[in-house]
Length: 340
Image (cartoon, rainbow, N blue to C red; front, side, top):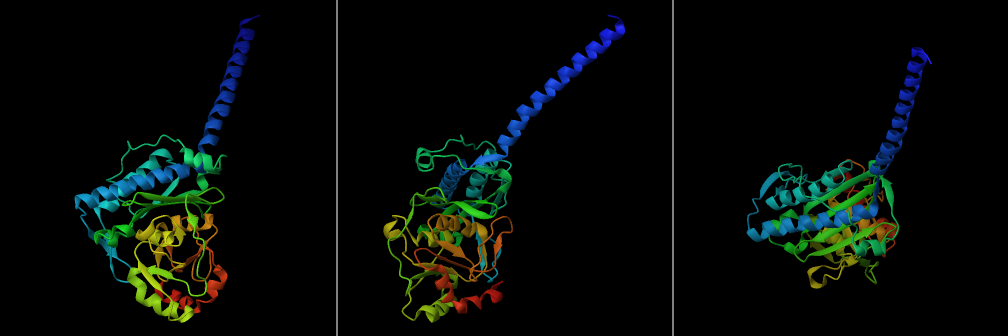
């Protein structure tokens, strides 16, 4: 074989090697890429529980040290101070760090935005606890692009500063394609954690019975007076109105959490003013998983894809005909345009 033949032969060998490398690269890294674009919802549930409890530790530490460092971060739409404490920021740092370090490709929305508390070394081992694995045996894979994680590092900050600790919660919600799928509500000072996955499992349950005719209605402490007149107009003057702090606490009050005297017992949760989605996403997921509903005052489902504001108020119920309930609240609908 002449020099030209040898050269052609070497070129072919070299080309074959390049093609082989290309095939290996495509198959291996393609698999990695495909694997990285999927996540098991059981892992996200496990991480959500861990994050909520880590946030709860931070909330306790700051409250015990009595170094709240409280200040106003602005005004609410109703003109009240929106408080921020060291507890909010420390909890945010731990909770958001766990998610961003473990699943950096997933969209994460937190009530707070301070990056000074972010801890790059805070890690999670990707293990699914036995309780979750035994309850949800099969993998539940979803695209990471479809996932939005909502974090409330400290719900009921006002009550936190007043030392009304039983109202305080830390919350995580996982939404898939804008629909709430995983909800975790943790009570830092009793160390109680409620969790649920839609079409999966839960460690919390509805109560055995609810009063549909004259329900006990739980509402925000800051808007109790305004809601009271409307609710009593719909259900009668004998209707009991329970003012309470924290959206997470209010959702738990509708359920059988085993919290006893530290938790009010209500039949319906109503909120007639502007509210942020990190306040309600976890509760929405839990209600949905247990067969309940949380909608706007008009009865619309709430989308958790991106935009953080819910301007339509909300009504949450379980064990009650939700559609019939909304029909009994025509006066509340007239409030919605005035509060946006």
